[in-house]
Amino acid sequence: YEGEYNAGLAEGRGVMRYADGDSYEGEWKAGLKNGQGVYRSANGDVFDGEWKADMMEGQGIFRFANGDVDSNSYHQNEIAGEREGRGVMRYADGGVYDGEWKAGKQDGRGVFRYAHFDVYEGEWKSSLKEGRGIYRLANGDVYDGEWKAGKQEGRGVYRYANDRVESGSYKQGADVGEG
Image (cartoon, rainbow, N blue to C red; front, side, top):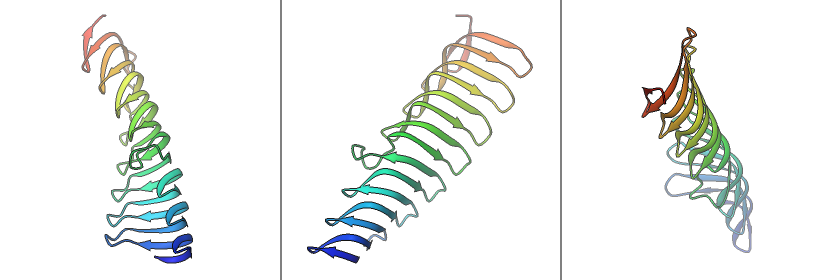
């Protein structure tokens, strides 16, 4: 550790270099990461944000080694810094999720803009489409209806780009006719 001390503990600004190659540069209080700081993992992941009592707490941006970028609010009641609440995740492939998170998974209302230009706006559960949602395909087709476990399930309306409309029931992503 290089930086300020108080009563033998890191206090104020400082840099900690860990044996595993990780490092933290930022504010410390009573020997714990506290305030604004940047944590760099040996694997290339970087978190730049707020800390409280050695945990990510408040606003921050997580840049993953694979190119994904997560800008979110972090809370101490989370397990190991998992996403919780509202946030935006930008994936390396170009996809973007803007919505609610629970226990590190897309959960609640959210919009996913896929890299191939499709867009889903609706409800999520455990990172799968679940509940009511609208899926707009890049080709102009639109499905407006119910989802379960990531697939069309229940009542829905499929509007094709050529103005054809199908209304009916879906089971595990397949149209099973009028319901």
